[in-house]
Image (cartoon, rainbow, N blue to C red; front, side):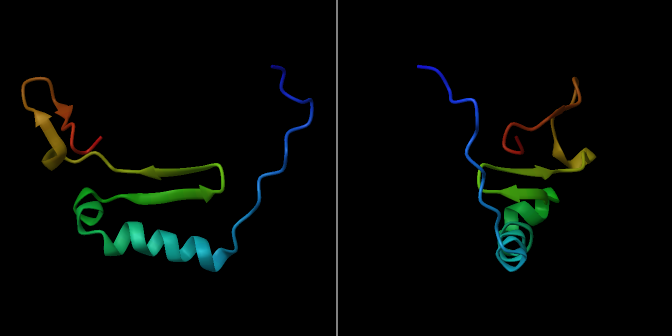
Length: 71
């Protein structure tokens, strides 16, 4: 099956809705607070976030790897 030449437009969220989602994920979910999760963008087709690496997030001390629960 071929994709059409023109992609359907992705609907945009209102800023208040995006702010509300950010508040839920960054402030109201305690585990996300511990991780330091920051939402960088939210759209109808994807969301992206960032976690700054910290020593407390290391799960494998000899290889300095992030813990699987963080991922």
